[in-house]
Amino acid sequence: MNKYRIDVFVCDDHRLFCEGLASLFSRSDEIRISRTFSTLAACRQALCAHRPDVLLLDISMPDGDGIAFCRQVLTDYPKVRIVALTVHDEYAVIRRMMDCGAHGYVLKGAGGSELHEAIVSVCKRGSYLSPAVADIVREGARQGIVLTEVEESILRLICEGLANPEIANRVGLSTETVNWYRKRLLAKCGVRNTAALVRVALQEGLV
Image 1 (cartoon, helix red, strand yellow):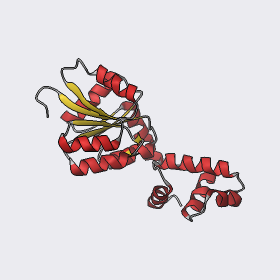
Image 2 (cartoon, one colour; image 1 turned 90 degrees about the vertical axis):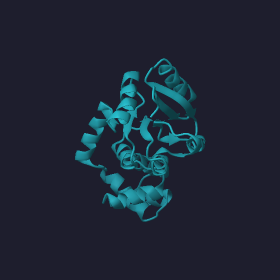
Image 3 (spheres, one colour; image 1 turned 45 degrees about the vertical axis):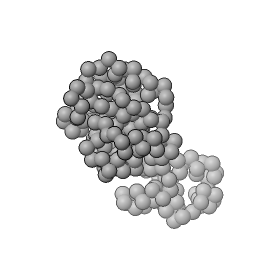
């Protein structure tokens, strides 16, 4: 770790947000944001040359999945601490990110003092969950992934390999409505594509 300040990379595709973070910590004696990246590819390339103490990582990036990227970074550079800094407040997404080894999870609505605490905590104590995220995790752990009857029916047909028009005919809904349900299922299960959705459905016994 840097002798004087915690060295931080930020990977987020919203430029104004990154600039705001850099400004927020510009006068800090403890934290220094040294680089910001708008793509996972740019961050990956920079990590080959220099490893920060902490990487603040968004989950939804234009060129890939932040969760998979988290797993890759920690495999290649296990000393880097990763804090998810994202709008995703779904239990399944939080759980997948933490299962990949993320050291912390903070929602973008958090204040500067909370983010400061998260960065310092993952360096000094190894982990950090913001209070809001901790509440989601506790509630989610009790409930698991809860699906409605319609969601269960559609998920079962998705796992059978049916396309949206075929599912629509089976369940008596429009194709547009089935597409909406498919997106909702992806969000509930914390995945980005159908293959991952089927895998989670089988692992969690949802079908």
